[in-house]
Length: 361
Image 1: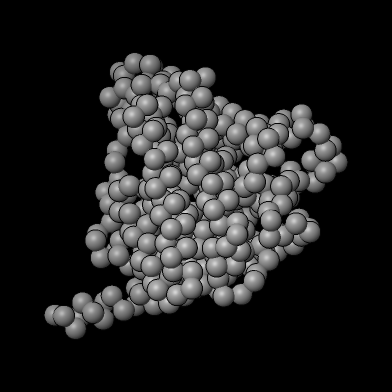
Image 2: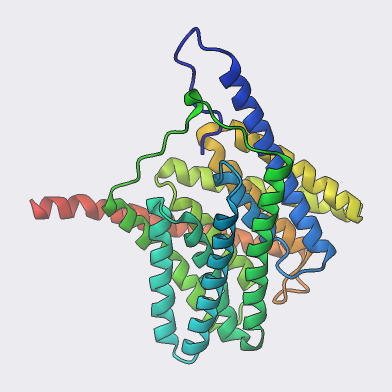
């Protein structure tokens, strides 16, 4: 995501484009900060389960939307949330006692989601599928009595996230780009590369979900969400540089969450929680708007911060007694697995590609 646009090529160009770029970046920063703090704080005030999921979705929506979605588009997004969530619930309910078929169904959906993500088409739908089919099948097998509740929590998070996106754009409207600021649509990877990335990401996430469905693992939702967030960013970009960026983003988000949690523990008031979230939203938002090609690194960092910090503020049903240090350890294990698997599978598939080309010749 490039917020700052391109360097001016004409020496005599007026100063309005630069001003527009600065104002647009400033408003995006404010939207991210306000959307993050407001959605998180309201969910906590209402004592909602999965409260951190709302700001995570808000960040992902605001980071890619150049303007407020029209009413029809916003309603369509809400409908997609409902469709993906209850598709996962129905599929899991029907196949919960047929683990092989459930594994195959989840694997196919994961591959489709990562394929859509890597190709740049229907990225939002891909995110919804990953969240729904990453969490609901696990809960449906391990705790079928609360599977419908979890599906409702995810659906509610998606609907509320869209509402917060509208509120953020209403308070801090987008700046219409001039011709000099028009964003360049990146060229999508070749079809073979898209399939390779999608297959790698699905092959990494599916064993985590199968393991979580087979054994009763504490903090399973945290682990699945962490691996999913890493792989979602990997499907947008490949290569060593992208992998290093993902690693740095997760380390930055985790370290920031640790500092923020300790500060909140020292001053455990709702007002301080809001101030802390606003501060972090502004800090990460400024880096996202000014980082250019490195913006995904800070988007990853902000998402990791929200997940880790949210798990500390409002523990999930599967780890009510876990300490913050234990949650960080679980996230570290999830990150270590994801990055190690990415490195091994990426290297293996890249070595095989030239061999296939030579054998075909």
